[in-house]
Image (cartoon, rainbow, N blue to C red; front, side, top):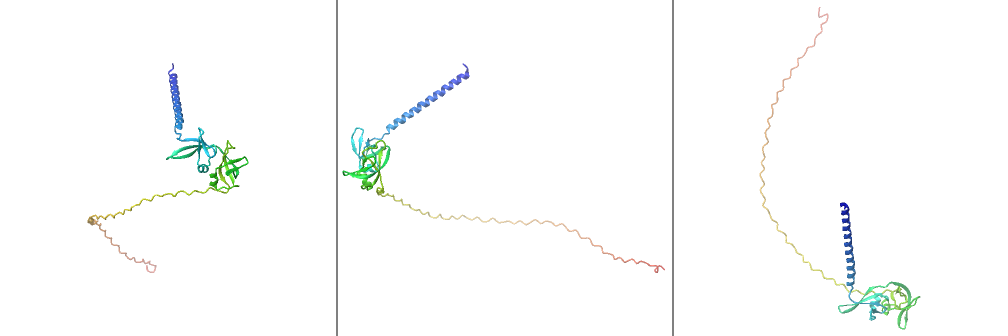
Length: 238
């Protein structure tokens, strides 16, 4: 067999084996993530909210505090969880159904509050009406499950012209600031260093430069007066 072809086949086998190993690792990661999600399921009892109580998977009815249901705007069909914390039973909304809004008029029937809409009449929690200080004739916006428009209960989202009272929050305790002690540093004493005597300055005399003798100036010649030449005439020659 040709040596080059043998090397190519060997290389392709290594690539295939590496791809298969990576695929197996990814599959293990996916299986581990799925298993970890089930293990992380918080302990508690799960059920379905049906307006004023929760129905567990075995059909048991569990009362829901009306104050919690109204402030949390629970809608018929929401999934809840009941659990204990410090010996106290608590509820938590874990899944919300799809909702739709509809407007109606607040009315009282047989001593219970209802909201009358174009699609029908829906029971609402008394605590929710009290929360908004609602009265008969108020225009109310309610929430209903999208897949069950004829559910017997609705949740109040708002009442026209009214807002729920704001609960006073507990005062925030501010921890006192720790006292900071100021440390006054003492001045560092000035340390005197001995002054060394100045070195005497020796002034050296400047060297004497000999001056070359000046050559004497030669005497100037005295000018000799020149007598004018007398021109003799014919009379002088006689």
